[in-house]
Image 1: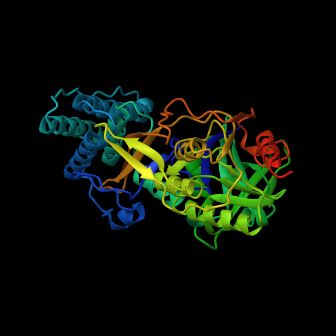
Image 2: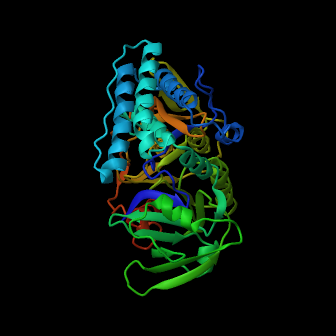
Image 3: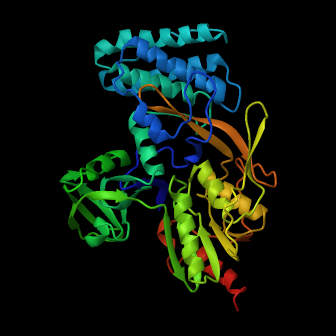
Length: 469
């Protein structure tokens, strides 16, 4: 069964962050010196990516991370927690890196109070010790700094609060902006047994070459067994006009096939839409920069064809941009609160319907499952609370917190949980999820989606049939 980890042809650099959540990339500006939340593309364009790796640059990264967690994380964090986390992150990295040399790394623990200057001094001294002791053994100083930042963020105990190195934040930016890159047009899935499944996107190079859903064996002669998805991505992607050779075999079969495919600039849409049995079926893969406009076009196309009903498929949708969720919800909700955020001080901020309501979008079914998360749950929850849609499927994931992305001076970023959120009816879904109005069990197997074996989709059509007989 494919895991929920997906690469957008191969654009996955964030294998641990499938549930990207409801993210901010420009809806507000963060206070303090640690950086603002301007549109991510603008931030990346303005960064100085040529910063040196000297201690001053490293100390500045530690300061920015410390300040941003202290200011923005939705719960209060003890400074000593971050200091211990930095040390733990570096030791973990060093143990993995030096185990072949049978070296047991050591970094003296430094204690400090909650005073910022003392805490920063402790952070700097731990990193300085690690650099002086282990850089002569061939450990890149920049890797130690990244390990320190990773440990600091991990120490808060929130899986959604993480440090993203520069290559990962570029991939996230690319994904949420529609994904324009040189590739062949496939989705990539990591199976439980480690195999890599390719699913071609209709009308793009891989599909035109005759590829179907296939297991990948090799790229340009490189056997990919045991490779992480980001490494597979780097092998398949490349400049427009160049070619890549893929060796594959069917999901259930052993006969190998070989494809030689010319790379093109790929724009991966987030929406797949079609008319079926008089219903406008719209599947949304994630909430990106272009998603609201794509959904609007799909809804208008359905109305133009006099759709008898609408099916919004949010299964396997792990989230994305909060503003996209609000915009998409507003097509169905004429007015009122879409979501309410609550920060660490208990202050509430309500996101209201935008006024982009599209009359006549009834009846509506929203399909959900255990991989429907965060921004998807915001939309599903709003439509359910206002009784603008009937939810069919299984309990959603239960991610009721919102993250902010804060760019760092080295081109990386901090993804920090900044608020928790409530649905319009005041429901807190963190670790609870949203119960569908009609429970229809189905295996969490992406290959069933929109096939004759898709029981949840069949149930949606049967429900809509009640209104059109």
